[in-house]
Amino acid sequence: MVLEWRYIAKGVRVVPEPVATPFIWTGAYAGAFVLVTVLDLLGALDRTGLALAALSVLAALLGVRGRFVAAPGTALLCWMLLNFFAAHPIGEISWAGHRDPEWMACLLAAALIGTTAGRVLHARAAYRRVSPYDGTG
Image (cartoon, rainbow, N blue to C red; front, side):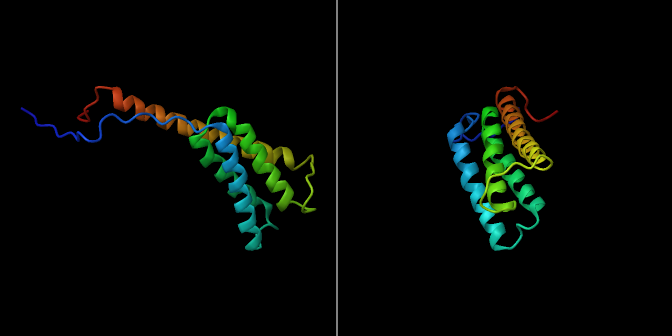
């Protein structure tokens, strides 16, 4: 006879629901503003590649908890703050045909990758919770 210990207090854990899109966009705006401000205070905004990488990481992290429909808005908000504060002339939204499509694609890809990773991880966790897998192989 095999004795299996189970924690009664934990019970069944539910799969987390994605966060509502307006909350993700609020996080994108606030997070991008904070990141760009910190990079400006550190004097790192002259290298827009660093700002783009930091905002891409933010977009991916927000995507993990968001829905797929939030990804384009997240990318757009991050791009707007990057363009408004990090690109020259500072304080003006502009469209540089050679640079801005690449930035938008990078930010959108980061948000979509984060969302896909989040959905896969949650689905995998849900499958393990309901499957008869006992861990012995």
